[in-house]
Image 1 (cartoon, rainbow, N blue to C red):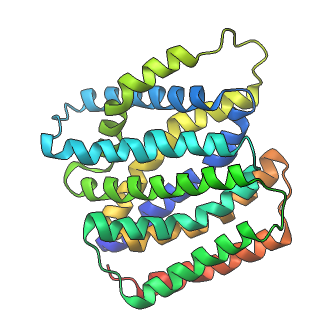
Image 2 (image 1 turned 90 degrees about the vertical axis):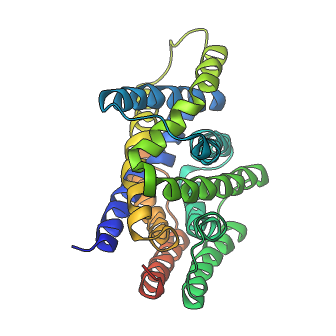
Image 3 (image 1 turned 60 degrees about the vertical axis):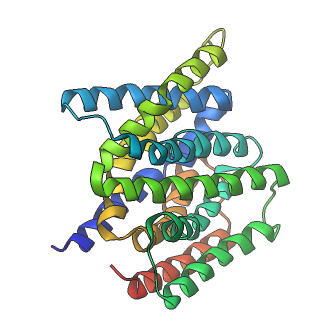
Length: 288
């Protein structure tokens, strides 16, 4: 099995794990404040990351790598979780998942800026087509939405694309799970303080579904998913493997329908099928 193939396999595992992130966040934000949810999930994941780093006696990263790790922290540890938690107070999980179709374009853009990748023109055509299909649906008014929710999700996609590309670049030297672990450790002092400040006075009345959502986003979305995702991006190419995110809405919509009971419209399904075809074409034209 080639390194590129392993990259696509690892990337797909990461996408499957991330597909439940927004539904789980929706469950958690029903009872938890968005800022508390953002800080507590990062704090829990950081503690697990520190245990892993200490257990394997991983040396500290070089000072030259701290800036990149800070960008990863801002993008995927703080920015994306907080902005999506805010967005999910105004829009449904099913609707927010459609925005994930814009992540491959954001990731590819930062792969060019930060990792010096140069995908061919045909790749960009299908990447743009998939993103425009998603954006067009989001702006079509086909479902009830809100301007504020759309704005939060758009900002989340931008910072997440930066965090993905930067983390994948670092993974080539540090390793996938080491990158997300060090990024969590870097954000730990701030996240731990925010957790204490924003902690609710009582946890009485918190539904079991909210606890399940918190547990999932803390362990899987914040840590385990990145172990596979960063490894996949580093092995198969950031821009190329990043196109797998176009499949994430498909899995996410299934979860929102089965777990949350939210309505999945025919238009959502049609857009998802269209972007799946785009990712297949983008993979065909992408350079390893």
